[in-house]
Amino acid sequence: MRLEELELRRISLPLVTPFRTSFGTQVERDALVVAARTDAGVGWGECTALTWPGYSSEWIDGAQEVIRRFLVPLLGGDDLTADRFHRRVAGVVGHPMAKAALELALLDAELRAGGTSLRDRLGGSRDRVEVGVSVGITDTLAELVDLVAGYVDDGYTRVKLKIEPGWDLEPVRAVRERWPELRLQVDANTAYGPGDLDHLAGLDAFDLLLIEQPFPEDDLLTHRALARHIATPVCLDESITSLAVTATAIELGACSVVNIKPGRIGGYLPSAAIHDLCRAAGVAVWCGGMLETGIGRAANLALASLPGFTLPGDISGTARYYHHDVTAPFVVEGGTLPVPTGPGIGVDVDAEALAAATTSVEVLRP
Ligand code: SMG
Ligand code: MG
Image 1: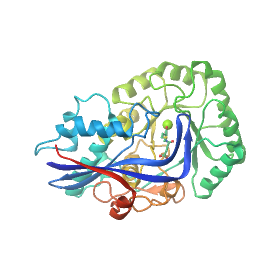
Image 2: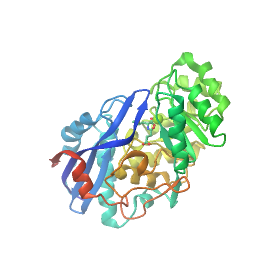
Image 3: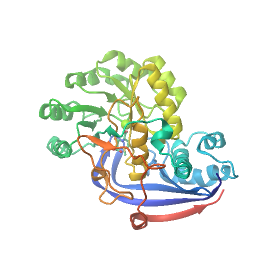
Image 4: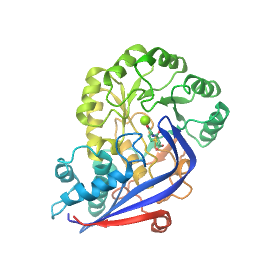
């Protein structure tokens, strides 16, 4: 396959509900949508970086610059494939979200040309997957309970609450008291430290599925200390940046659950490899989310259909995120979403919606 042009399109989609985490608040998604125009046809991808480096070290303007200056120049020639892409860009250290966006666009182009779905390419088999919803920090407990009530009415059976120091035991208690049976988990996005083990043990009272990434990305030992200290399973998100780190975390006992996010890992093919490693080790995985548009969520659904994804993903229905997405909406039924099975990512991009949301377009050639 030959990459002829790469279109980098920035779009702005207002969020239906502002999303507050321990590292900041988002009211809109400033997304980077990538179209790879190849001799085999067009493929679509999306960069999951946020507008500021608060989740991880990447941010969207930086990712676009890395794509422009360092990645696209490596993609010339007739023999490009999604597999070879990873070898071509191996000399660029880090920047997994920039790389994952291009990998997805190349995968989509090559799979569409071959008539194969991303689901089948990755080794998935399910037609529907269980999904959950991630609920941000609110000003009051009453607001939180109202927000969760709306999602429960929408059919979600798994809810994740964002926590931070000062917003943890009480919000979890309020939601647990109202919904004793709801599958509930929490995500701290690195907001705690080694002095918080006893405090976090207070979460054991609420029968949580897991606690996600309470400590900084590089602090596997404190995650291990917590895993030994509490009954609630410890899950890593930000820490899981590669296959090697995943193996280290499992070997150390730093987690018993892994959140797989293709953007954070550098693509869907390396994500499938982490899935295989975790499955062989008996470690449950689930698919994380980065407020993706329908492009990224279609691909995440394909990934989440692999057999080791035994916990519901942060892949909610379109109505939880956007009034007008750039693909046809995904609608949650019975707490599940359908896995696209058409060629490539299996969804079409709505050119009109894309144009309406566009804030800039840049076209690059290798
Ligand atoms: O896409 O539904 C979604 C958001 C899921 O909570 C979510 N993602 O740390 O897991 C996480 C956060 C990171 C993104 S916050 C903007
Ligand atoms: Mg997380």
